[in-house]
Length: 448
Image 1 (cartoon, helix red, strand yellow):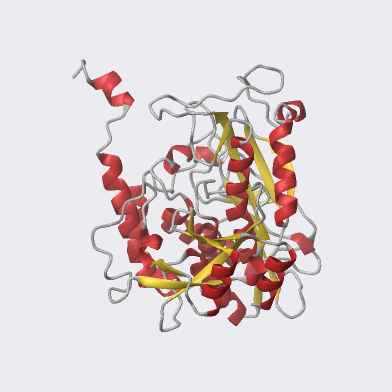
Image 2 (cartoon, rainbow, N blue to C red):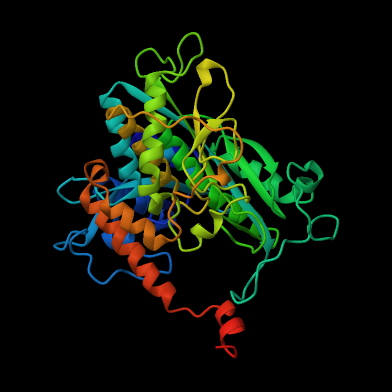
């Protein structure tokens, strides 16, 4: 841990934020004075209740978690990953942040921790001599400050003094309306070593997309995790909210987290998805076949919230099935035109609200199963995939049923993690069912 100690000393750090992503991708953890952090790091003293990994998005806990947490201690300890130590650039006082891995006191990894799940999938690839490469694309909306959840969200006022009411896909001037926010975003990302690439205006009113450069899946998941926090902070400094909800506004498209993924030979670095003459390899086809077969069964990790399924509607730039095609944006699995060395597939199913560790892990796991089982894909399609049958779950209830009923997933993710997801999402669904919506009051109150 000499790297961390040197970093804190050289940057004269006063406080350290120890971060762990929970199941929803929310940053949990502790904030400690720098010296107390160092003392705890040396003695396994950075303790946290294991229950944070089964905390629901609304802050509650499932009733019975003894089968998925350590009933004996209930505490776990955190080991900071020295490669993730960074400054927190928006604080006045010198503050560091570091992403941690959670362990039981018998030194075993916490099996329900999102970062561990991604590492588990990456280990499967390494055993085969494969190195997966990913690049997420994160969409989000900028909206007015909304302090009353009963009121719908509206786009914020830009530099012109007007709200954006029409859709300005790829509009450069429309992005420039919010230049002060994005200047902070780029500055904050540079200070944290977050390797963002292209900023574009998406199809919704004040909806943006940020692309990341291709790289190691764990590194990219860490960066996406920190990026969400960064964008929200930058926006709030300008009295605007940034939201990664999958479907925040009626009548507007939803926000996705497209995941580009390719496969390299671990030793040679050669792209295993294309032959030297540029043709698709059998491995590539099997990877796509695995995505086609298994992505509908892991939707609780790609579309984890009740709101997530509002996004998966035809003609709103979101897929409804797992058909694939070349440079076709209506399918669930798009293969962009690229040089053979850059052959990849874009998984378009995941929402921006997904935990990036779990979404990337799920996507890679499905491709892995396809390659191991030597599956064969359906033929690529041309034209709109919306004319074809919907094969994705319509609700989180349906998604959880498929998730639990697919035997092939249990040895990949582990039965404890699958049970944990089921408990957490079941508790969230129970809480959601107790809420009476404005639609119900409007249409049912005096009419039925």
